[in-house]
Length: 449
Image (cartoon, rainbow, N blue to C red):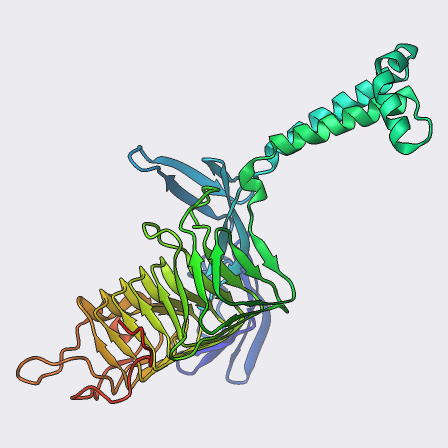
């Protein structure tokens, strides 16, 4: 509506004014030379003649989606999947979790989208137990007002009177006793997982020495966590509340400063050698990481937007070294070795220079979305792929002037897998490549291996 177009010779200019979705009728203005008409109604079969033209609507787009429907399958290991349908205001439930469609929006390509929200209510049993006990205590209070209630609560009356130094009536004593019992039952009824939600840092906190994390730690907005040189952070790989997330992780919404030194790096590793920890996560946060070692995690570092600089840091033997969203992360003189994936990124890209990315399953995984990353001046030699490009990649990536390894005849080995069906989805620049490894790459650390 309101967007004009021209066609034919002599040209006709048509300006759609309003489209009635119910009657499928278009009202428009038109001009041919000096002749113009306005408010012409066009039913589906076409308008009356305007000069020598007839305007026929052939298609329309309703900007408002009529419904969102998601068909999902839930499964537990070794069991048959269960299929359910989720609609707006019609959630699905599985294993104590509720799955809802929420937050209608549009993506960067103007496609309508919704979010999938997963919630769990660990305190629900305590709520119902509290409601039941409240009802029982109310009945007991009313019963205690009867004369017989004085005799029943005599013992409680004497104890409370002695403790307070003043008389307490039988009714009050009975009520207090019942409330204390109810409080104790509530504490017992509350599930342990509901009490183990982790610890929150609201101000400033400094870690040094050996720190053991058996529960999540969240650094709130406006707060700062500083980790000093020589600190070892041991993170739990347990999942005690069964939410699918390991208990050992740090989530930063404020600021994280890791200040290791060449001879005394800050080390993140497993509390239990048999169980991988979760990750260090920065969500739209500020971070400075120097001379650190991330090893034994599902992911070492996870950055969503924000501004995070990583220097002289080692990522080794993790499921993934670092996963990133946005263009706010930069890596300089880092080493990624022996990870499943060294760097995975989407909707943007990191700036990576003077780093070693070797002996990983996949070195770089540009997953999807708009580009903007620049990865240059590095050594990138991995077991399966040096670079994987996801099928939803739409932006550019500058990965030129890196050393990708070489065959015996000296020819460069790129090892690139491009999953895109539309090769025009973004320009991936790999050449020129370096013919020999550049000097000064990788982390300066006494624990490089």
